Image (cartoon, rainbow, N blue to C red; front, top):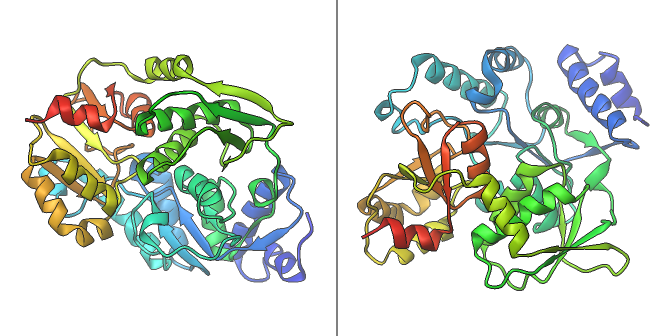
Length: 381
């Protein structure tokens, strides 16, 4: 991999041990992905925020890094494990809370914006199309590549942090113009957001780096996010191209394929609670949810996850949802949060493929999977 003189000096340790370590990560990643060189980025979005995912080793590493490391580019953060405004209600382990706060403080000391959101594309202004970024959150990387016209590899937590510190990233994989070898044809009539989530999940399994998709028609924001969230859970594929290439292999996504995925992820006939927001809900979705409820209230506990900026900007709609029995939670997400524990909850109703995957495989709870419209029909009065 070709490096500039400045990059070679950094790799040799001439700019300090911290910068040397960051460049070692980038060079190792670049060599593993056949990168030609490093390119400058304008924005990094980091995962590795939730104490449940990085543990003591991660917390200690970040505390050490924060003594000297500072980010060079705009850097934002994925969700953490709880909403600080309501954490006292949930009886979380004190060690978890203190370690999560330590992680939060370390990132802020390094100059990272404490956005705690998996949907940076909804709460920040997007740079110009073609801009190089480094996104570790899988649904955000896919959204950036597919809908926003940005370019990012599907980063790991370490590579994205190294990119934030150096302002560089390997020029490989999705940063280049690519030609998918598969076109997926949508063959499901009247698809809802759950269908699009299953389409993304299917695409992640059959695709390589990127896939063509055809037959989609117009999609709303919820459906686009569902596709990105579904793809991000099932494989390394990280880009949709919305066209049909006659030279590609054709694969149909039909009712049979959708049913297979539903059967894989749906493990319960009902949920003890309802969770909405994986990826987190934006202001438009919060407003839509209020409109869909039409004054009705949930008959059981309903947890709604959104970024803090959305919670503040949509305060009126959030108050209406609270009146309808919802708990509005900022800074955290359905996935991997200790707020949903198999010790207290047997099963969860959700409309999210991403949420279903992690609730089943990481939180260890049963999943009752159905579209939002059906959740509202079944679970409100």
